[in-house]
Length: 288
Image 1 (tube, rainbow, N blue to C red):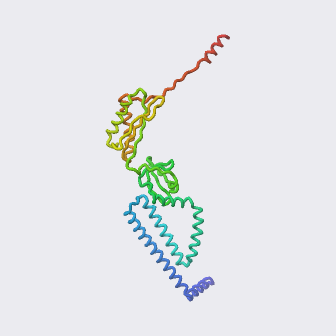
Image 2: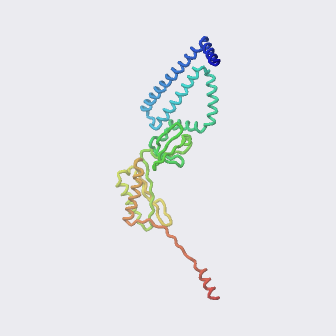
Image 3: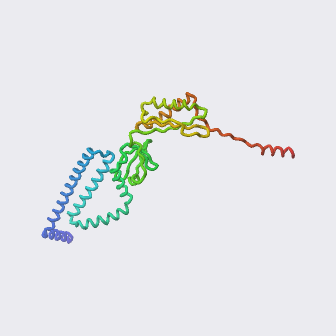
């Protein structure tokens, strides 16, 4: 009973002092700010999506931009709510500054990934479905997030690479240009008809509609080894047809070379067995 009486006295003092009204108004202002803030964030995100839809920015970067805008909006809303609750702006700035320094030290790699993502947006070194190499990793670009870039390999594996790694690594984009050169090399014997081999290769390039006439194919001898001549067959095609053209060239050269008796020489190894030790032992046995 004494506890209930004490609570009633505290409530009476709050009512008499007018603090209950202040608390109520503060909570009402806080609720209105939260609701209004969420609505404004939603409107800003909708406008951002529309602006991105009209821009020339690659679609793979949309999610990154949307997440960045959403994060900034939430931070601003939290700061406003703290101000309504009576927290001084100078205090907020001091706390955020101190926390920012601590977070920057603890999450320097994550911040580097965010900075790398921003640089990807600015420089646009690749687009969705581009086939890229980063260090020793290769795959098609599937998605770019705030921290990571996701690749999908040809054998359907998913690879995630931190944006900071991409930003500081040598990146090879195989899909940036509209055409690519398909490089093939074939070995033939010294007794093979080189002129016929070149003629067959040129015919293969002229027969396929996927192989471009300009730039024209480059076919010739690139090296003369101990047992074989190495011939280059370089042809240009649309980037999307690269692997199809490469398989076609390899298959057709093998088929036509076999039909025209142009052989790839096999490696021969001559092995000589020295039997002198056995003969010496047999000769010693006869003496005994």
